Image (cartoon, rainbow, N blue to C red; front, top):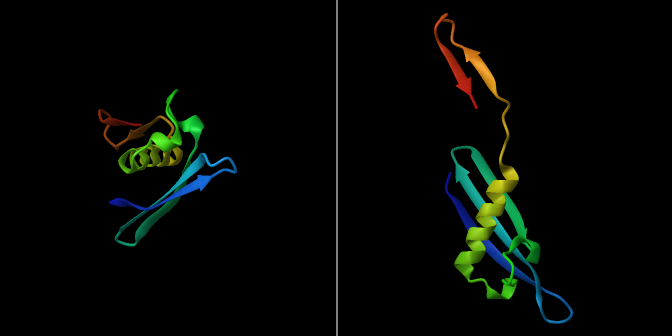
Length: 92
């Protein structure tokens, strides 16, 4: 699925500092779609980096990473038997 960045929104606190950067993503394929809003906060950054230091490309990259981490689905380890005594598939 091709997921595109559709919006970046800066939230400024009362002291004039960026407190949060909102990112919005959308993607469509066939009849399926994904829409997500991810907020980047100072805690999401490496030490010494502020939200004001980020370029548009860095904001997109961090937003995509946060989106991927948030929607990652854990699947249980299972073994599926295919009907043949000698064929098993380990699904992870």
